Length: 151
Image (tube, rainbow, N blue to C red; front, side, top):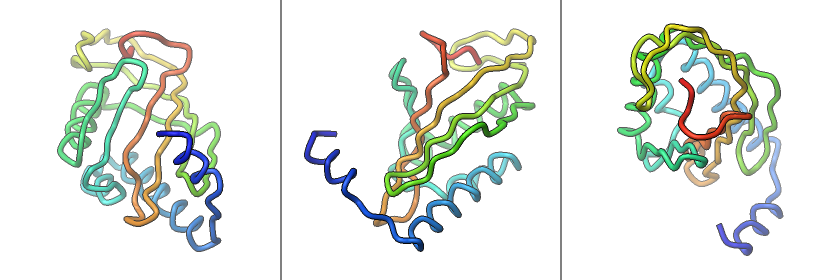
C-alpha cells in the first residue's frame, strides 16, 4: 500500500453501524472456525480474499485457496484451538492476538507431524473491505517464530 492509501485509511471514520457490522462478521468468522464450518468461514470473506504468512510469503488466494488453507489446517491439527488474548476493531478491519494450541497429526505446510502439542501466540489482521462488507482475508504472524510455520 502506498503512502496516499495509508493516509486515506487512517482518515477513515467509522460509524456505529459499520463498527457493528465488522464486529458481527468477525464473531461469525470465529464461531464458524470453532465449529469447523468452512462454508460459514467463506461467508465472511470477499471472493478475492488472500490468506498470507508475510514472513514466509506463503499465500492462498480466493475462496478456493482459503478453503484449502482451512481444510489442510483442520486435517493436520484437528484439535487446534484459538484462545483470544486481545482484539482491536476499527474501520481498517480486525486485529487479534490469540493463543493457539493443538497437536499436529499430519503434514502441515511441509512440516512433518510431530505428534507433540504446541502452544504459541499468533497475531492475525483481518483487512476489511468497506464496499463488500466482508474481510479480504487474513495476514497471519506467528509471534517469536521465524522461517516455516511450526504447525
